[in-house]
Length: 283
Length: 262
Ligand SMILES: [Zn+2]
Picture (cartoon, rainbow over the protein chains, first blue to last red):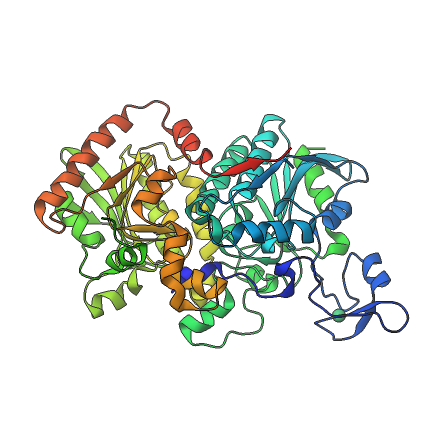
């Protein structure tokens, strides 16, 4: 039963590229309805506010949007973009699924890696892609992250990472499970060299990603309201036959239980990352 | 003739199979159980302690499922909580301090899936084990003896050598879970089991394990003696290896199937 941990969130995003909330385009400016306050918000206003509703609800964000938000303009240099997962198990339907998701998301894999400057501070940056099989970790995601931590170690750079994931990618079987060990070992080497790793956990960060590199940062930040956990809430409800409180596995709940350092709303994220990077550089 | 993978899954789950405590009792001498994670509690789903393997002191850690209904309930069906993984890590660090090798026996459908487990950081506990085991200075051999259920199994398997019994399984997700997610039908578990490539032969082919242990005479002393002999030889060789940590890194570093596009 506990095996069901890697349940992926069921929503339209997973199928590739569509937004969760309906977009109304019939009258005037296109708007989106906020799932939290249920008010319509003009898209232009959302965009101007890093996809955050005036009520504070953080909409899901594509990897490239996050890079544009976090990295100084024109500083991001992508690394390892040539790597992608194959279908090592010849898992039924996986090859077709990858083709569909790649064309719908515009990404080759579920994580984008590279170097960047944040507030003038050089770092390695990884951002997971929710519109690519909900950021699930297969061989390519594991390999790209491992190479990034190795690159950061070699160049003595801090790593800043945005996590979003439904967990390990089951279509790659054991090989995807092994990415948890592989990435963890790379994080450990980077850490043992005295280098900084800051992770920002975004909605949702679950399963094998929570149980590996996402939770292994020196400083763990989370976006408000993000679901962060190991087992999926639905699975826990089925297993325990208990109704879970509304706040269960939300960032604020995880903070209260001592597993993250701070909640970081998007509005102040870049300033916070900059402060932390500067302090660890020692001046 | 090989069995169909789902039949192997059923064999791996059979509650008549030897469990962690059976292996501890028949392979080692003078086992002393050491309890507790020193932070929250003691998880009965993971048994750990010190013992002799021949004339070598070792640290032994085993996931215990239990045999009878009462035992299985007490052991939470071999589904560890965060405190179980933290106890295991505490004992591994202790082994490192005293220069003892570590032997792990793994048999779990997965880490406990519950409210308390989440409140106490199941994901963080597993992540910490993966990270710390990757640089543990003493040899580690992990044996999957029944079910190897995803992260909950891997949390004790970042080892120098990983072995599997002939009819053990090792998988990222249960066949039932996989079928219900992908095909909305848990009854397709048989198809999922075949698709997931979760048998010992598959794991060997992918380089995830080094050795398959035959199940001839399973549960009888000769069966345990064979495992004991294999462990002695392996730990002896590993103990003399000066590049243990680098090789362990390389072992996991090489796993995965990645393509490079032009
Ligand atoms: Zn709102």
